[in-house]
Length: 577
Image 1 (cartoon, one colour):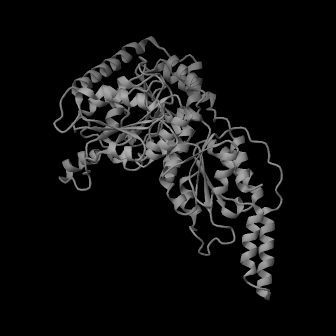
Image 2 (image 1 turned 180 degrees about the vertical axis):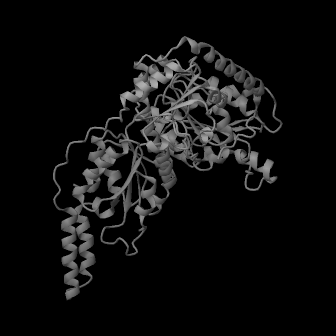
Image 3 (image 1 turned 120 degrees about the vertical axis):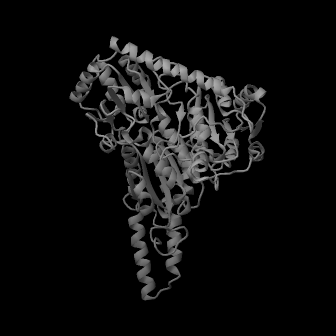
């Protein structure tokens, strides 16, 4: 049994259906064995894409996604994607190839200190140096990735642990034989034989797969205390973040709890879509004003980071309740009046069971917020009809996409200004149907996230909303989608620049250096990579082109829509740091 066989068996037992990779000689046994065991091996054009795809699978299913990359550059190319998963608290397992155990530090091909590079960006990094340890270490990686504050785990797998024992013995035997029959040569042969005995010895039957760890339950006394605070409030606001959607199988129960509470709610990150597109409790605009006017703010899996202006968005007189899996995130920048350590979805479900919600005195407050929301939607609709001299109005394009979305759609957000504009307009239709990078603000997630989403939900329409700058990170993955017959639609907001940066840089520093891109014909590039390319520059055909793109993708072919948009002042002054 090879190390590749051992890994494949564990992946099957852990419920892994997809393995994302970019091939390399150090990891070939894993890929071959996984394929033989019925796992779909999906090869990408860049290692970061493989990790982003594993991240998306984890977010949408709750089962840790898995990527495997070769040694050296293969591992180093994953660092940004690993850090993104760590900050987004996404459980995944990264398997990294490595040089042979006896050759480490001796100048072997692609031999670098991977552990030092990876360790700061994962929950744990471990090197396996014996075949017998491979299965327990991999099971442990899956377990750890889901415990407490979820996140990525790295397992380094040297090449001689993965290949067939007979072949490895032949490799080492040939190297030792070159030393001859001198005393030193015989000593080397003895040492190599002893090392191989340790490398392959003691392999027994694999243990049963450990049960998935339960979500950390919040303290019931603190839940009851939160209920008391909620009953006293007259202007409460609830913010639900990605961490509350950690359990992909319990989204219906979470939505039911939020509705039972009856508190005006803002949804962020992966929580977008939790209540569907038009629930009267959900507010979308003027969040900062609502937080400053509220007398009680409940954060469910939302830290007070830059997205809440480090806690300054919340009025100083408001009572703050924070539920979070992380003690550090719960108290970041602003200490809550009541801190509830535990899974925020379990906290909200427990709070709903206390019967603390649906207070009659909240009606006027909800209507006030709803009136503001309606007014902002009307303002956006008016702005969308304005003409822009240098291209299509991006608001109009986004409104057309909103009207095109089917009930079973997944939206992947990868970009700056165009994507942020879309976030004001697009309304995810159901839970777990919006994927954005999270607090790291990483560009380049688009293709990987869409790849994972389309594999997990093959019948769904998967849309990537790209900025033209962000597209540059993963344009070559059009080939990946085409080779694997995955029909996604990439809508590229092409205004020929890094507009989110230029917007502030030009105004403050009076120079656009580094922010200007060429007006590339991205639809032609996509065609060359095996996708279908559509050009969108006629305002009278926006709806037709988007519907055509959706229908073409449903046939299994990826479609890239190059939307030549102009620039507006819609998001002036919106940059966050």
